[in-house]
Image (tube, rainbow, N blue to C red; front, top):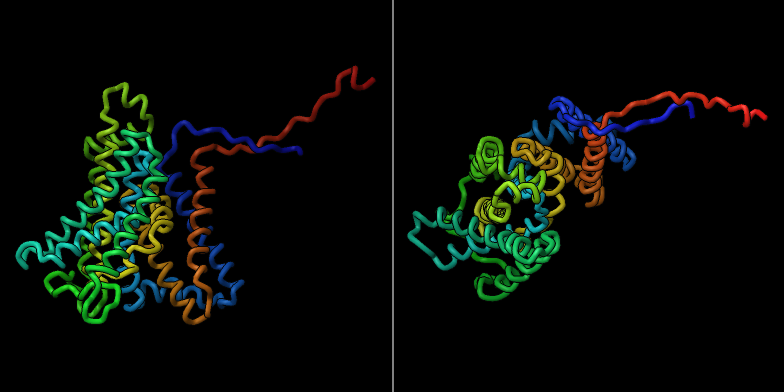
Length: 363
């Protein structure tokens, strides 16, 4: 070939390039999604209506999108915080379950006076999630256990514990269904008017702002960045790597626990069997799409929540399978990951010089 492709590692990456590749990857992913949906029989003229007008321009669609974005933001923020120190938190579902269980325990056993019940539920949810993620962090720091395995397996432990309680002592005695009785009004997050959207949105926004400040302006954020770059060098410099790992994991678990509280108090108004299902893959995808940046994670969570809302509409009107939304998520994740090549490497196309034959070769 007369030309060859050369990849040269970049020593410094300008911010505009990071943003441009992320936007380009998302746009290319959306184009792939559109082609995929058209192949499934969705008219091209309806794609704009389903993905833009209904999701963000219709009150019902916007309500559904923002409600979904609350829990997605919180679990994805949990993953993003851990990613910043290279701690792979695959256990957001387990931490969400433990937060929901701890908050429900405050309600069922009527801990504290009624006017303090909701703050106590919030604190209990954070403690439950923090302890569950902290368990995996202790195993990593003390026993050098792989956090991917420990956090993943703890999901099943939390889920089975919840099922045991729902089929046992916490089962609703009125109808014998595996769910708790409905929480009293003072334990439910208020809604915005007639919408399903609840005040958990404020909790999510507070978490986003706090995590943004923590990562960008605090000493803890600076030390976390050093730990992420090189753990061995950080230890040599006297940075408490173990303490930062434990603190970050507990903070991430607390955020996941808040997601559990927002679901049971703001959406379900009770603990059910399906509170913590289907959050692992979306949380990882959103954290990656948002580049583990709190503001980016929030924007990515809104986009993925809109994807789910549009997917529900497409399934209802065009009888598409349930895997459509997951496939579209995969398209977005793959295209953004592929565009990372442009961030990490400088791509040059060089023309190959023709080989000059030597006298021996001529002979």
